[in-house]
Image (cartoon, rainbow, N blue to C red; front, side):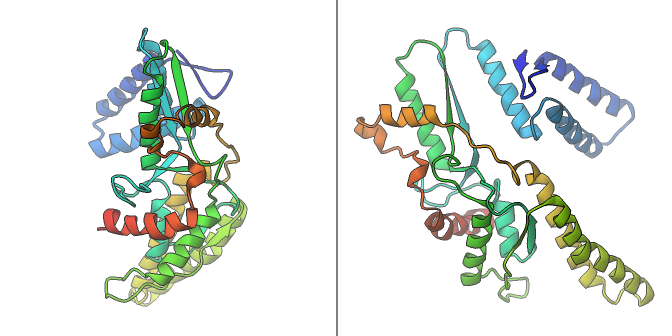
Length: 311
C-alpha cells in the first residue's frame, strides 16, 4: 500500500497486478491479437495512472517501484534518485552521448526535419531537464556520502527548474538557429528549410490553428483528389503526416506543456555542499546552475542527437 498524488486514495500494488492480469485474461478470451493487447494495455495503464493522479504510465510505474523498494528494504539504507527529463551528456563518457530519441528530442528532430512548424505550449513554461552524466554523478556522490549513515531513506531530486530554468521557447529558438545554420537534408539531398516554430499558448488557440492549417485544407485536398484522380495525393499525404506528428507529440507532452511546478532540490543542494571538500567527489559535477543552455544545445546536445540518435 502506498500514498498516491491524490490524498483521498491509496495504491495497493497487489490489487493493481491482479487487475492487470484480469484485463489480459479478458482480452485473450476474446482472441485479441498481440498488437491489440499491447495497445489496450497502454490505454489501461494511462487510465490507472490518471486515476491516482499521475500523468502517464511512466511516472505511475516509477512511483510503484519506489513503493516496492521502501516496503522490502528492511534495514538496508535506501537512496532514491529522482532525475527529471534526462537529456544527453555534457561531458562523460563524451559530450552529447545519447541512446535513441529521449524526452524533448522528438520535437527538436521534427523541427530540423521540417515536420512541425507549430506546437502547443506557453513560451515561458519550464521544461525541467537534467543532463545524463549529472544524474549519474549525483547517484555516485550520494552512494559515497550515505555509505556510513544509519539505515534510512535518502531522496534526491536532480533537476534544473529551480536553479537554472530551461523553457519551451528555448527549445524552439535553439533548434531553429541550429538547423538554419546546419540544415539537415531531405531524401533528394537538398537542405531542409526550417521556419520558426509557432508556439500556441492555449489548447483552444491550438485547435483553431490546426483546423485552419491542416484539417480544413486536408478535407479540400481530399475532395480534389476524389474529383481529379488523386492529382494532389503527395501534397495530401505530406500535410496529413505533419498533422499526425504534431498532434501525437502534443498528446505525449501534454502533461508538461503548461506545468507550473518547480521541484525542491534542497537535499541535492545539501549533498553538494556536504561533499564540497572531497576533491575526488567534486570532479563529479551535478550542479545544474553550471549549465550554459545555449552552448549546451547548440554545441553539444543537438549535434549529439544527429550523430548518435539519427545515425
